[in-house]
Amino acid sequence: MFLALVAALSMMMTGCSSGSFGDPYQPPVTPDPDPPTNPFIYGKVVGHVVMETGYNATGLTMSDGPGVVVQGATSTKPLAPTGGPEYRDSDILVSFRKGTSEDEIRTLVGNHGYHVKRVIEGLGVHVIGIPGGTDPVLAAEDFQSNPQVRHAQPNWVGRVTETHDASTLRVPNDSRYSSQWALDAMGLPYAWDKTTGSGSVTVAVIDTGVQVDHPDLAGNVGSGYDFYNKTSSVTDYNGHGTHIAGIIGATANNGLGIAGINWNVTIMPLKAADNSGGGYLSLSEIIEALRYAADNGADVVNMSFQIGGASSGEDLFMEEAIEYAYNKGVTMIAAAGNEGQQWLAYPARHSKVIAVSAVGPDLNRASWSNYGNNIDVAAPGDSILSTWPVNTFASASGTSMAAPQVAGVAALLIASGVRGPENIRRVLHETAMDLGEPGYDNMYGWGLVNAHAAVTGSLITKMKIFAGDDDGISVTPRSDMANPVAGGFFQTENVEKGSWYIYGWIDINNDGTVDEGDYFGRTPGKITSNDGVVTGIELRVSPNVGVGVTGISRVVKLPDEGR
Image (tube, rainbow, N blue to C red; front, top):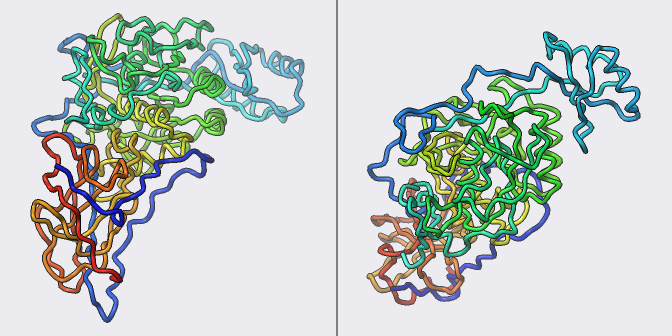
């Protein structure tokens, strides 16, 4: 059954056009209600709308904490625990001022008893080998005092964030799909009716490597590089990178294992770890990998690692690599960190990186997820099933698992025509399911990533909100139409005297009817308008699919002309 609306009520869903990347998106200030005017002819309704994904979290709870469970094992293991090395003791990173020749550099380095191990191409960063027993911090400080040196620093160690254990629905036949609660939570079965991704979209995974011949990654992994061993073989001795790759793009609808967010995608595995399996990445390899991704066609880069802690400052060489990739149009996504504290890991806190916190199956912030006022969105990060070496699967938890959920949705957005990191950021913000405090907050950012709303261009700012009534067959509006601001706050004016429902609607296909796939909802009860301001209204709007499809089917009567 469908609700037909005349053209005056229909919205034009223009989607997101390509354009300049623009400045990083900033949260708007929560609007206050306008003061009543005098004389007051009609009422006003002020409230907040939540655009839901259609997910039912009833009875689902959070696991104990970060760790990883492989093949149903009962014990968990951390992948890169805190307390590990802060920097490599074998080398430092140095850049030199313009005009300094390679001969001068080698002489300067040799005078210290050091040697040039290699130069990171395109960045001008020299990896300088130092003798055993030399303090890298003191060595860098000594170099920094030379007028020919632009910048010197230790080769910091990054660590992967720990891990643990309707007719419009498109459900794949993968044998373990029913265990993937995260896909339902983000509305993927509805999103896949619009797009399942594209092999022309490339997502780079800077991590511990990937098992490229995993049977459930077949066809979705492209060529990559191991920056530690200088080889095209990206063997994953840890498991973290293979798990990330599966979240983004495990082969779907093949009757095997799990479904990735993208049924079709090209994963670019970039290994920045050694072969120890300890889950530690070197900064020199990270910045090389990020530059390589930008130069070799990556549309999205997933960074499920953190460099330093709460008090660590930004890193000059990493900053330059981020700026380089951003200016090339790369969308970078990073994990917030797993200390359960109010600070964001680096590089997630960089303004040109999309920062992701983690929620569990109950859609509450995971107790171990970091948070802060630069969080962009939240995503499922608890008990996430994905691919694992060797030819197996693992259940894992961590903000490491939340970040690739967003990277996967970003890849779907690109496949559906949205381009540019700030355009993608804006769509993620304005389609998220608001969680926690109304509007933007530092626990969940703009809310839970909503894949269906994102790929259909259903921005909350395009929603029509109005007061009215229905008899089960037709609806009569009794107010002006209002559009919420980002975050969901709305103000509907010229509300007639009487008792009315508040309705919300996004006409996804612009056909003037509430049909399957649209967002539609009304308040559970009526509000009473008496020529005043009614505040505190909460409205929840959901995908109009399956058993939730509205039974109203007649033309809506327009308000009087001239109101």
